[in-house]
Image (cartoon, rainbow, N blue to C red; front, side, top):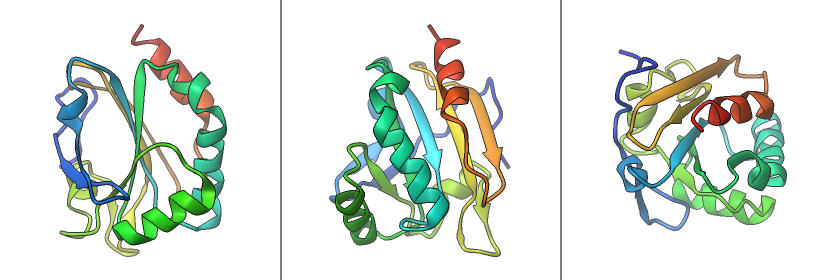
Length: 153
């Protein structure tokens, strides 16, 4: 069952690239959250997308939102990816149970064993306010993220 815009976003607990727990509810009442699901660390389109986010993070979130990137890669792969690409936002591992959070959000690709390319914006109250899903080889637009966040202002 996929999540729906206007409904509460399912909470989750995942480890970041350093093994530290991160929950969606950590941001409740504090910041909006841009939840970016991506298929694979080090893959061409994912690397390009996350570099673009890295290069425009300040103008995208403007300190009013947190960006959390989620893949089914192992925590150690995510740590290497973060270091290699100089990413300054949390990379969350949905590795085990494999794809559990991706499944809850309706974006787990059973054939490939990874997350589909999807983004969700969750407001400070924990309500899902916006989503976009792309084909696995199609990058998403940062301008769409900006518009979705501006609508929450």
